Each structure stands twice: as C-alpha cells, then as structure tokens.
Image (cartoon, rainbow, N blue to C red; front, side, top):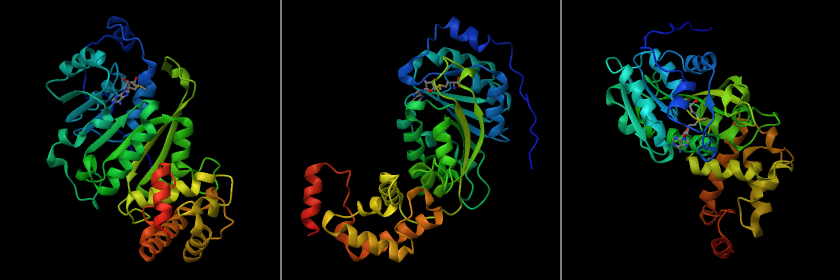
Length: 339
Ligand SMILES: C[S@@+](CC[C@H](N)C(=O)[O-])C[C@H]1O[C@@H](n2cnc3c(N)ncnc32)[C@H](O)[C@@H]1O
C-alpha cells in the first residue's frame, strides 16, 4: 500500500533556480565527473519521495552538484544532511542552501570522493537500531555519477555484508539512480535476459526495488541513456550466508561465460588440471544441472553452488586462493601448488 508523505514541510527562503545557480557560478558540467544535472523539480521530488519518510532522519546525499535534489531533501526537514561532493565548484551553491536552512537542518558539506569518504564518521551514534529491527533513521540518496555507480554499489554491498560504515547503524536504506540498463540488471530475476553478477550480488544482500525511469531529456546535459531509480533495503539475513569475497568470486566466474552452460564458467574456479572434475563435483553437491545457463540459475541455487564450493575448498584448501583473474606469474604459482 502506498504511504502518504507530507510535502514541503520546511519552507526555504526564495533562492535562485538551479538554472540560475549554474549560470551564476559558471558551473559548466564536467564529463569526467559524469555531471548530468536533473532539472525537473517534479522528478527531483519524486526521487526524494521514493526514499519514504525522511523527516528528522539523517540523510547522506552523494554528488549533490548544484543542489537540486538537496533542496528537495531539505524541504522534507531531515535532522542532519551530509553532502559528499567531489567538485569544489559546487561548495558556494551548497553553502547557500546550508545557510537557508541553518535553524532547522545541520548540514555537513564534504568535498571529497565518495569512494574514499567514511560517511559513518558523520552519522550521529544515537540513530543506531538493531540489525533485525526496522531500518534506522538514516538514508543514502544520490543521483549517482555513472562512472562510479557500479563500483560504489559493489563496495557498499561488501560493507552491508560486514555491517560496516553506514550499516554499522542498522539496515540503512538507499535511494539511488543508475543508468537504466544497470538498474535493470540489479533487479533482474532468474530467466531475465539482463540477469548478471550484479543481480545476484544485489539481491543476495538487499531487497531491490526498481521504482521508475527518468528520461535522459530531463538532465542537463542530456546523457545518452535513460536513468532508473532504485531503492535498496538490506535483508535481515542474506540468502547466501558466506563471506562476500567467496560469493563474489563464484558468481563472477559462473557469469564469465554468459552464453555457455554455467558449468563452463564454474570450471574456471579451479586450476586447469582438475577443473572439469571439481566443477562436476561442485554441481553434484549443489544438485544443479550442469547444462543450465547462468541466467537460468535462481538465487537459492546460487546459494547451493556457493555452499558446495565452500565444502570443496575445505576439502582441498589449495584451491581456495586460485583466481583466474590473477596476473600470469601468480597463476603459474597457483597451478604449481595444486599439482
Ligand atoms: C549525475 S550528477 C548529479 C548532480 C545533482 N545531484 C543532480 O541530480 O542534478 C553527479 C554528481 O556527482 C559528483 N561526483 C562525481 N564523482 C564523484 C565522486 N567520486 N565522489 C563524490 N561526488 C562525485 C559530480 O561532481 C556531480 O555533482
């Protein structure tokens, strides 16, 4: 059932429009920072509404840019707003916003790379909830730069798996934008043609909800692709209860040969001499048909494959560190030790 949220709870004093801000501060968009500014207030508010109730919450916005989404967040009266923006040119326009709401919202402006910023450091401890309770009053929101969105998501999933960073406070929710194709992959279920490593990884640790699309034309400059808005809520219990690195490796290798039978990719988890035998053993333990293709494998079946792999590396610890992606020299050493 849809929840009704009050809009415009906090009135901001008259401010120049985002268009004027961009002109005033000469904020020409930089391609290298994937800068595409969302210009439509209706769509901006729709993203913020997708985050649910955020009044009195601690909100962290990734890449606020000139502050379009930031304004909409502020109008919802969060208790604290943490802004992480790599491009210093946006600081004056963000300070203008921080100043306009200084009596009601505590705003931290951090100029830095989100991939290197410890957001948790800025989140007050009193928001902490137990992992198995409702999510804490903390939200991560961002119209993410395309160039880092997948890396950031994978990094955050690893943090979720370890209950670290913003997830040390409980099951912190995310409302994020991705290239439409990436958003479709994140939410793709078994048999979907978009199904890939990212689908299994996201769905193993989170409830992934593809909310709606935003046409490229709503951005300035217009990107070549449309955008998808996704919300993610960490699951109380992941489907595969094994370390992130193990799950990532197994799922990655199985999808490494997308069009072939999945066992072909699974074989690459093991050194050449034993790969056919070990992969077959793994599939037998997991009760998976070797002629299944990767996109035909359900999340629970991936769980069985990962568990079977874990059993095998317990039996043969020499295979544990075998990694096909390792540089040639390391690979040779790995092959030698497994003979
Ligand atoms: C797609 S734009 C979104 C701008 C604004 N939020 C909007 O919706 O109009 C992405 C923003 O992320 C910033 N950005 C790019 N790489 C970043 C990084 N590694 N860390 C933090 N911010 C980054 C860009 O400078 C830009 O402001």
